Length: 424
Image (tube, rainbow, N blue to C red; front, side, top):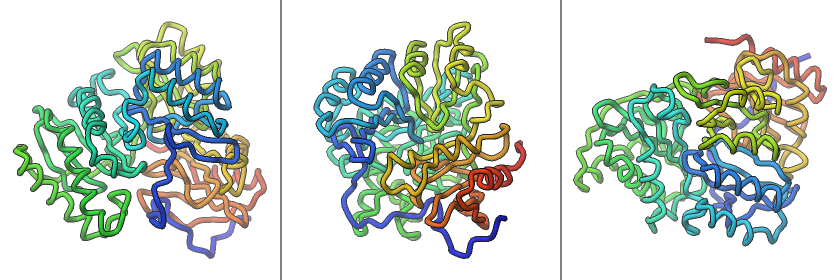
């Protein structure tokens, strides 16, 4: 029997207390987890060459647990590493061009529209922005002051990654212009498209100055008045730097829409989802052998040169190749036994609750931190000391939560009821 929860849960995007240094893992700073050391490899735009993908697979097999864990920022985590694996991992990645700057490796957090340039829907080609911004970040001493959680997003105009709530977002516009958004503000600054990477880094510098008194790590952690003043300060700095910058308004899309699994219209590319974001060695080889690989912020991948028959091979390997998969829209953090903070083996529970496809996305979290949760509208399942709590999140607001205990059948029923039927 479901009952309303009496306690008020933390909202999904609650700011963390800044009581210590930035402990985000990276390639050179491994994180100690219950299943061994963890490395997070930043991959700007999620883009990997076949050689880079091969090296990542080799590193996972030689140094880790063999799996490649995709993150909600299009990055890759390797788990089960030995404590002394760092130097060899850094060597492998450095030789493959995946570690261009040691001091900057944890701040190369850039997501990009994964179908940009493939389906003809974007307003402009954002690849020059991606390479340009990463080059500027790696050349900037100031950028090392950004936290490992600070996020840039490059949207080709379709609104997919603009909806992810990045700290600095660039949006391609018609007429060789770009819009720049700081945090969730509806105020945008338009600049010439060629100035976009420079403008994004300048905006990040303005954030660092605004954050200095409090040590905020992200734009959303700034106080309301400071966040509201940030676009105006960025505009002043852009104009002082000689940029043709103009202030305007552009509401952020209400929710991110990941690319549909399956063939990409007008392109040989294929889009697949990855159940719970973990790829084994065989799945990774299938993906990485089909041209450029693009990892998406929805724990999926786009292969740019899908050969005839590859979609069937990917489906047979257990990947999500169509919207009719029961795994479509289902996500979870690592949970027990990999994370000491987790209160439950949420991955096993998520697998037990998988049902007919459709309805809202659902994300299972082992604790209140909700690491890697989605954005927009989704079903939030959180393990608590007394069982599990299920609610529907819309934007930054949670609906009335219900308690679902620990019984797998009751929990599955509560999640199915919260997801509801598929909506347009």
